[in-house]
Image (cartoon, rainbow, N blue to C red):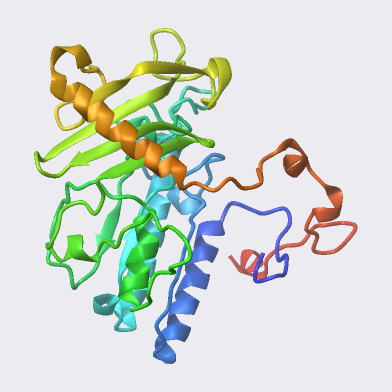
Length: 332
């Protein structure tokens, strides 16, 4: 869709990245000409199954189809950054690049190729509640005003992006609701560490885990109340992990990990070995209760009745055929 109009149906994935770049750069040109501040959000379809890329990137990577997709996305990000440079906005623009979740490690092609990515040393992956492989994602910030360079080893959240943008634009945060995200500007200015002390990790509507950033002792703890029920001798579910019932294991007492020394979450700490571990659990559970006490229940938008396909809500560009092609696709 473009604005409220369906411009292509069904979508053609090949060449879609190039169309994203064209639209993004056209938008930047327009804002630069009018000397207007802007917010540009580019939700790339890469890298996600089904894997696709244009002919010029097929076979370019040593890492199969997934690698080719990464190459094309890298090219796209580079083109947008080049555009900022060419219009003189490179040194006056905050750029945040990240992923919505860790790799879907169960996703493999018919020939055994990894098609859902790879999480390295981190355990688990996409749709696993609080496992590091699912929630710890690479994030890159380009901001010429920052006092920090290189790697930032502090825990942040993508929820922080909202508060960060609000501060960058000089806009006060709304007072009529709780905002979980924290501005990253003090961190980027080198004036503080992580803006968080606790980050809770949900699977569906339930909290499965929490990260506790213990600032005084410079420690990073991870607590799991619920974990996926993996297939035997693996850290994977059959295809995708679910959040409920027999698909999960509940832990009482919860599992505790020292993420600095055990980022792979391979060795849960024996809580009974030292009273400080029980204290850590107690601190986090009290904060969890406080957090939950402020959550307001809302209507489930993913209920069965809300999830089933409704023909009368189906977008259509030329009823009853519902088939059209984007003009940009025809030119590419």
